[in-house]
Length: 572
Image 1 (spheres, rainbow, N blue to C red):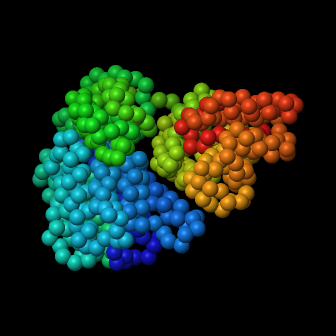
Image 2: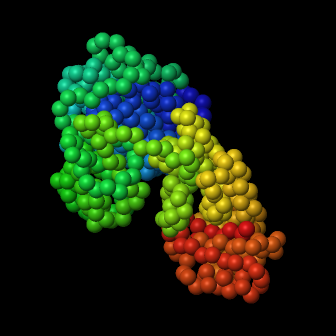
Image 3: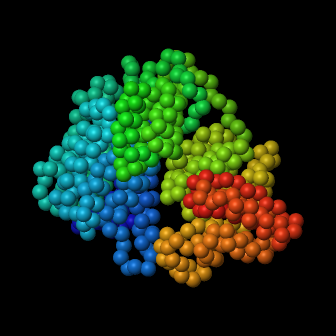
């Protein structure tokens, strides 16, 4: 992490703030989860905020890594870093609280990136905090006082009255937010009955505390003392749901059932998705979703939105998104009988499977293939790698005693290792197979035998993955030095085992050259995974080349969907 304090709000300060915010939320996550009673006592606000900021951190680090890999000596600008922070939070937002935090960060980025300044001073930070609070309030269909929105407005109001550098403004905003947080029980009866402050507001205070540390070098006073009102409370104790109707909010699990739960006190489903759509279409979408349910938050802009709503008809909420544009990363939570969202008798726990495979896949087509083979999948879209929290959720969703984890990307190995370490603390036995491409994952999945001893199955899958060479054909985004020479933007690149081996101008010709080089070392099976932009004729050409030039080598072709690379190649 960069050194603190930072003098101005520049790209390095954005990076520092994001890192410190993640650390602070990591320390406070369990406490925030424990005091989560609004909109419902589901104990996930701290976790949702942590995962949202984790996604923002990954996006900012990617920008810095991209500049470090370039030929120029200069790093990213403030606009680059602020936009990356906002985009990362948007695509990784979790739950009601995370979605609102994403809009707060987007509001700040709109000011910080305006006119592409080298840095922002105290005045710029004041304007950014005001824009953050105002834009977040506009994003919520029916704002409620005593929530994170109140805390954000109080922080902006306090910052407005501060004069001085960024450190002075940040501390004023933090102090204003703390005071507002302490007052939330008097604004929301559900908080007063439970004897706690608002969990989302507590999370925002933690994020603002990290902002203070960024500009002063001093860790802000922890807000834990104001997190509980009335009698002393164990911060790790579960909070019972308050009496009376309360809107639901929850974890991210898929559900195929579209029926509401009898006896439900609120809507039966939480629906979240990213949406590519125009502004006018989103205005109509808001009206339609507002009529369908509650807890509606729509954040984003510039063609990409994060939609969050609680409804009884999950299908209608998704259909509304389809009419507005192109929804993806759709996550539906079914608040089933017997959990904190419902009343009535508890549902007996579902029996765990003995073993499951969890795999990260780069496109919808491969997700379908992996699912048919029995794997639980996590979709990784171009530029949107999953965070460790997504992998943890997928392992939990697999509901097995033993799990084999396939990251299918060299850059995801550490993320997958962190996820595996976390779920091991929950008593799940996890083996991480270091697959670096989806074609290696296919090879591993082909030899998976759940009835075999766990260690034997893992060894067999690891061996199959390791025996599969992998390649991809993609298009260069900018001029760069490579192992094969200098490439220009628009050149077709053939990468073998992660390194550029071929630079060409035609997809089919480049792929053929790559395939020839891979098969020169031998092979029995060729796997081709075509992206959306690649016509079937390319696969037919490559299949013909294998038949003519390499006897006894079989070829199998799959459609991968929007997978980033034009073509993935595996040779076993």
